[in-house]
Length: 453
Image (cartoon, rainbow, N blue to C red):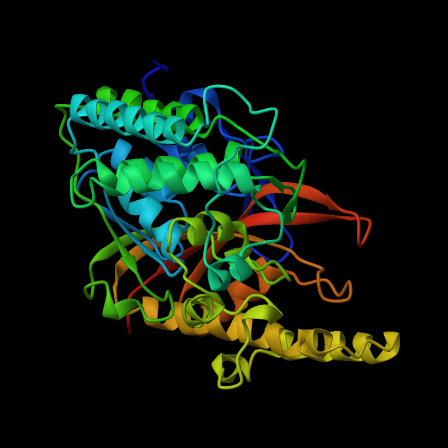
């Protein structure tokens, strides 16, 4: 069993900054890796690019939040803010528009199940899965040398088209489908969702062929892996973590499958004391690709049309998620820097002779991104308490023909026009971009909502 969670806080150094009053540099290193003492609950399922749990604790402390506070994460992803808030006994609310991360966050903050009950479920599922595979002549406890005689099961054609090609090999997929059927025999039981999440994490970490860097791609093709054992390893982590908190009292948190640009539909007016979040960055990263394997195999997306329906509820941050009817750009017609940026991107495109459909949309998606964030900030004012503090982790980008996008600075300009007070921009880390041969900043913009005048 891993070590119990404990509070970890790093010192914060102050230095002056040009445009904004003070820049506080978080001395947290140059990566967002998760520390061993932070693995409990967080590594049930986690985006490779998620911000680290200790960053959330820094802002809980900095904002003076306590058990009477409510934290919102409107782009909650895999629930880092929600888990940290709960561990600090602070109520949290999350919004996430991508179905599988939304599901993952709901499971990661539900600690009510009895660990022994989950362990009994895991043993029963694994035994029945091993037995079913053995009946097919497949011994999952060892890697097969020769092809099994049974016809391998697969997904239907529409679901298969939604997968990244070669993201999972035929035999591991067959085994996964068999295991999933055994898990689904307990559908409706408290244990079921933990089994599904454990399988989702197993798919992306060990069963599938994916590799994660700046982008998701296909790595070494694995002909066979011990699927059931990998799943058992993942669900054992869940059981161990639940034993740490069993019998203890924690506040109830909640997660909504919702668009962060339509906050009042999910969250009560004047109810939020603080926001700690990280929205998508303006780049060509299709965030649904990161979760495609687990989303499709586990049935959260049935086909590409189903996927596109959910994409429409996401902030427009890449050209593969832009639709003809999109009009968030109307929110930033008076933001000079956004208009200058879009003009510069289009001028660079013409200069370089780039004529593809996606390249022609670069300028538009930049305006839609910042327009969507302006719409988000505007809607947010309806649910914030006067004096609420906000921390947004954002990053400079140069994905669009190497035109530099100073995301944090532009977002503070937008927030100020909407009535927010900009307290500072904190440096989270820097990272070297090979495309521009320059250091890009990842920052935390810190805002305060004074209330409506």
